[in-house]
Length: 243
Ligand SMILES: Nc1ncnc2c1ncn2[C@@H]1O[C@H](COP(=O)(O)OP(=O)(O)OP(=O)(O)O)[C@@H](O)[C@H]1O
Ligand SMILES: [Mg+2]
Image (cartoon, rainbow, N blue to C red; front, side, top):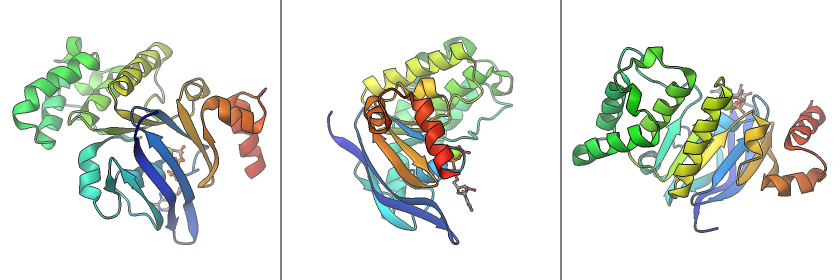
């Protein structure tokens, strides 16, 4: 693949005595769809928050699109989009008003109208511009959240469990959109607990108790643990070993 856009080196985060993320390393190439997998509490969100420049690492470091997360968190924030596990939309604003709001936050200036039109087209929101965010379906809400997170044309986008609680058809559309963005050259970093989604990552890292247990393409990870196993088998095995 092409150039490396994310470099993570021995990244760690401690909360008191507890190591939530424990010396994790991996690289991600431009335009990759990269998965962060692991059980509840394994350190996925903590890793993402550090990589987004929102939380200082206790050890190690990372660069995102050339910006160092510890030295230049503001630059990191300008180059990434983040759709958090509890993403914020303004429920009493319409879809259009939410997009206007985020366009304002990112100070898009002259590019504002063009970016809003891009977001509505690419995220399949054109027919629901006037609807209140508070009454959208789960799938529509997720697409609006992704639109908001990508308004400023970031190079790298972090999606923390974007499809949790979304029906199969909406999940499929959401993944079509993720693949389209990756084809545009945007690096998409995604967490999920759905193993059918995990099978479709270009590459993935598997975390358990803050440590890296596996890294590679789905087939490489399977080969590492037993080629006859599914990712779900491996996931369950690793979890049982840890407990
Ligand atoms: N601010 C904090 N203070 C103390 N402990 C924290 C803090 N944030 C996270 N933790 C702990 O760090 C561990 C990793 O949490 P994290 O949210 O990164 O897990 P996760 O892999 O995203 O889990 P999930 O799949 O449930 O979203 C958990 O044990 C959590 O309780
Ligand atoms: Mg999480």
